[in-house]
Length: 90
Image (cartoon, rainbow, N blue to C red):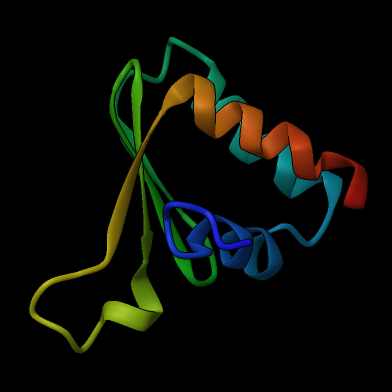
């Protein structure tokens, strides 16, 4: 079953989560309130902290030649929950 984001999060996991160290870096960036805004640039995706509670995920490679990028917004709680659900596969 495809998720609401059209499978973007699953693609993100496949393309970016190479090891537990990468998982921990991304998890901490999203989870820590000290990082209120900013970007984490991965191999294919950019994670943007819009504010303390909202995260944007952009497939930068898929949208680099388009005028309107494909971006999906998650609450911080939902994004962290999705990350945790994939941790065992690393």
